[in-house]
Length: 254
Image 1 (cartoon, rainbow, N blue to C red):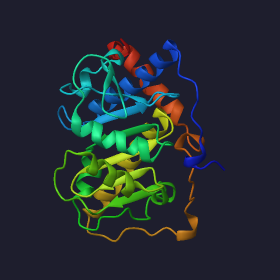
Image 2: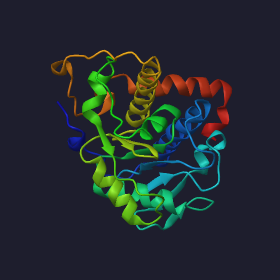
Image 3: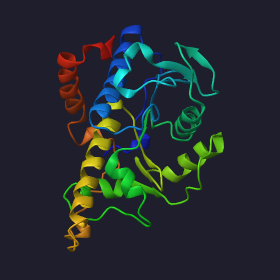
Image 4: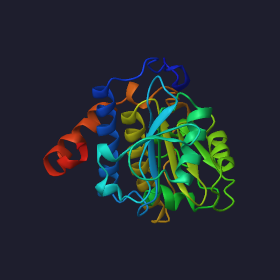
């Protein structure tokens, strides 16, 4: 069994074609999340480390998720310098992503968004995933809870706090804020976020009935520490969405 921390990243820099494919994958996640209303106007941010470098792709300040293209993504380094691309690096985005990438080198992809159900869940004092839906058997052991949010912070200290709160998990539900999900590949983080938001939706809807939730047996939990896509069809899921985008929003890969 692979652990998330044991998944090695390529030591050599990517070719132009390989980087372009990463850009298309990341651009696709912005478009998919926009379709699902999972982002906050021109806020929220996704990043992906470029293997073999200290640089990562990230969305530029001021763009809606629905308009981001592969060519719009900025390359910046872990010191905050823009290396390539047009536009401005959003400082609050940089300070979160750079610190997570530095503290968790296995977290090559970092997605930070405010999807409706996970964000509403983050507003519930002491909110925790129930062990009710079958997805919880997979997700609960991979989830950390950041109960120490203390308002809006723009400096690197906030990114360090978030990175530390994540620990060895891949999902961080951030009190009064939203969610950050990491993975060694874009498809891993994308698919895990998708499942987490759907599972949270089921729990929130069930809670509205006022009836007690089912309780699965604790020993049924899978306790899978590896990458999401090594257990589920994450790559196939992202590819399926990309086929939809190829037909309906082909400019995402321009």
